[in-house]
Length: 176
Image 1 (cartoon, rainbow, N blue to C red):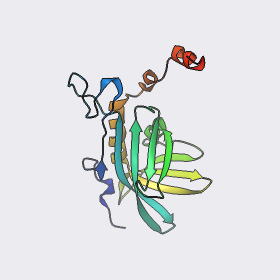
Image 2: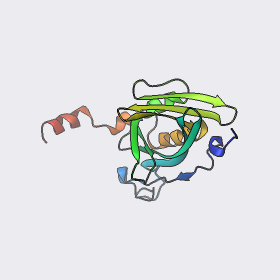
Image 3: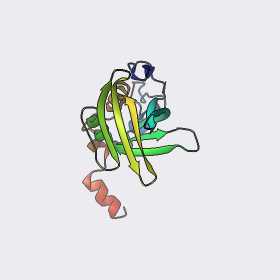
Image 4: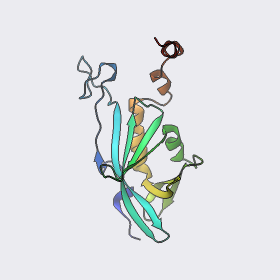
């Protein structure tokens, strides 16, 4: 099988659509009220993933990787974005981070790093649902670069700061 550009360095993504946020006084264009730069509240990138269709047939599927500060513990992968048959998978950002280095996950989502002569460093994603299963392969350098951009929005370990405090939760539960 000839090598393809999917495993190329992530300097040139297929498409990147970082979006500005409006939290903490940020403007939609990624600046704050004083004009200083603020990281976007959402990090998105569309990558081409290879998918095993059967034992000898491989296809490609456009997949949007999305991270939002509003949901700091999760990443969302949307397969076939913009098409009627698009499908979302949501799982932990930590699971993705760990899967770049070693086997991670159990049950519906499993991730693990791999390497091959044609595609270089890859990330395998095994997804299972009541509707079927899929084995996908992504460029590990591209996924790692995207994931690193998410840490500019919410640093590793910083997600707890975005969650409500115990007092705020108690107030919400009390109806106030």
